[in-house]
Amino acid sequence: PLDRRMITQPGERRVLYFDWNVQSEATTTSPFTHMDITSYGTMCGFWMGIPDAHVPEDPNYIFFNGATRPYINMSHAFKFVSSETMVKQTKSADVYLASIFAASDCSPEKYRTKRLPKEVSCFDAISVLRKMPLCNMYRLAKKYESDPVTAIREFAEIQKEGEADLRALEKRGATHGLSMYF
Image 1 (cartoon, rainbow, N blue to C red):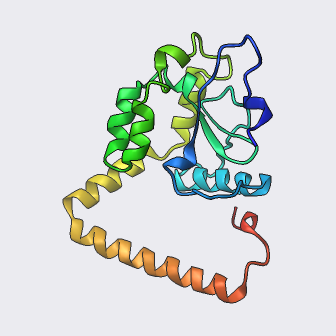
Image 2: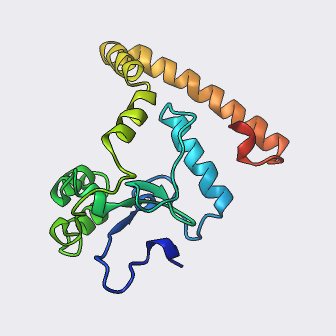
């Protein structure tokens, strides 16, 4: 069922939400439990280089955790991006998703927030960006762009280490859940 916090009350302007997992890695046919969604949010922050990132549960934020899945509040996102841009960004990876963004139902004119809520500010965006290791990412991208052979070799080594860790975890069994890794 839809998270009660996301249901628009009668007379209120409708809000458009996007289930992030339609295009992402955690597509599933059954909803996440709260523990799963919390672990998933923690892992996303870790993978982005922000291990202390916290995904809010308030639908007033642009990216938030619903009761069982992560969502984007597209009404807020339309302040920064058009549906045409979303089509261009997704078309090569997922034609079906691009068609959703191209549909008349996904209309910024109909759903765009008139004013962003106090929960969404430039200061919030800057604080998140400051936590991301952007300079390190840029240096690595330049390093590997200039030497793709080394990049492939180093990636293969990381992949081997990861596979060994997975085999050890499989052998041991899932005894403590994901939270033990964070």
